[in-house]
Every structure is written in structure tokens, then in C-alpha cells.
Image (cartoon, rainbow, N blue to C red; front, side):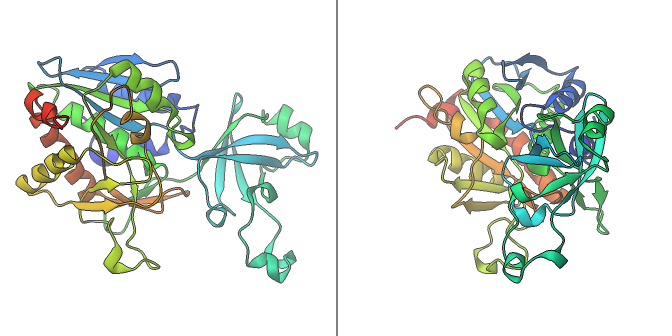
Length: 358
């Protein structure tokens, strides 16, 4: 079993934009090869089944394998790359950042650029640069060199270039794609931890695809599993940095996993929420609760599958997600994993049935 840092580093530095998540599938297969059975939906989601001794209830752990990135839209005559976003980006976080264009000839490094500040009119300096006004500079002398020499074509995927790094406090780590490689690592570690444990259920760790562009893999994967309960594992945006009202913060780094009570895409099953909170308290696991007024997860698709699936989001808070780099506290990760393991050992037929007795 990889250490937490080793697995997060491996997942973070791998590439997996929406529709191009193969590197992450490979890592999941390698990590769980001896403890899980694999199957796939036709969009590319990987389903890792860990039989615990009971066929039912079926517990789905969903962590999406894709990360936000970009796609090559066109190449200018001068050899600059015009691109489009895959997932939600904010223009202020993109300029002057390094990226890698994935081509059949290999990786091509580039820099996101735009008109220099020296040439902007005063009113332009106070607006967010639109992605259509940006370009990627790969150092090509013209379009022919970019295409024939570098192998760049429309449709190539583009990922941020961000090394994995420990902060001065080694319990804090930074890297790209913690949304949602954190969730993927959590279900990998949970299945590994429980590999030789008899459970009152069967666990399905699912690396879903294309969450960042509409939770598409969640919709197809849940149809294959038809779970009785779903736990969505995410890297949730922290709200403890300057600019937030401290009294309103619900995702403070270092204070435990965030248990989500609401977001615009899903209201979780109330009895499931109570069960998760009671388990956290009984196990003395630090945790936070959150009512999110924006954003969503794979839960949007999973909780309305067929007759409905009791679903909840559990997530360690991560600073600066949906940018080139995130910041995660390992205490939060480990407390989330502890809570997840406790839940999986307790979710038996009677408890799961109680969630849908109205």
C-alpha cells in the first residue's frame, strides 16, 4: 500500500482531463489489482468491486478521475495555440501559467499568454481576460512547425503543469488536480485498508469520468451498479483564506472532513446525514458541516438514479481548487479516510433500509 503522500503525488502528477482519463484508470488498476474486481462502463469509468461477505447492500464510493484542463481549438498562422476550457476556470488564475499539451508525438510544454499589461488600456486592466483573448505559446515559429514538428492538432488535450510539493509544514501538500484525485485516493486507500476485513456489504469504488463537464460518467456507472447508498468523495473548496467572513467559514483547512448538508444539485438523505454525523462523533473524528450555495458533484446524477439512492458528499477542504494548484492538509485526508472506513464497517442491511423508511 502506498503512503498517503506517495499515492496523492502519483495521482496529482498524472494527466486526466475530461474524456482522457486513461492514466488515472491505470493507477487505480495497479493499486487495487490484488484486492478488487474491475469492470467498466462505456464512457470509461472504472468500477472496483470489493466483496465484503454480503452481496448487499451495495455501497458506491464515487471519486471522479478527471481534472479541469483545456483543449486545442486552433493553431494560428504564427504558431500560437488558441484553446477552450474543459471545466470551470477563472481567467485571473490562468495567465502566465505553464501547461502541457498532450500529443501523439509526446508532451509539448507551453505558457498561457495574452497582450502584455503595458499595452492594455486602463479599462482593460480592470477586467477579467476572456479565454478567447488568450493563447498558448509553445515556441513554434509558425503553424507548420507547431503541427508537423511538435504534433499539435485541434482536439489535443492540455493539462496544467504543477509539480507536487510539500510545504514548510510537511503536513501540508500542494499539487494539481486535488479536485478530485483526493477522492480517488480515498476510495483506493479505503478498499486497501479493508481488503481482508469481512464487511456487512459490498463496496464499489468508482473512478467516474467527465465530472467536470456534467457528471457524465456518474450517470452511466450508477446504472451498472444500482447501489443502495452512495458516498461522493471530493476535494471541496476551502473558505478560510483572506476575503471570507471568518464566522461563515465551513471548510477550514485542518479541521476535518466537510460533510455536505446541501448544494444546488442535491439535498442529501436526512437519515444518512444523521448516521454519518453520529458515526463521526462516536469515533471522535473532527469534522465540519457545510451548506453550499453553489457548485455540485457526481451526486447530482447518482441520487436520482431509478427510485433514488441515499447519497452524501464527504470531502476534505482544499484551498485554490479549479486553478493550477491546490493545498491539502494531510490531517483532513486521514480523518476523512478514518470516517470512511468506519462507515463501511457499519453500513449493514438494517441501517441502509432505515434510510428509505418514510
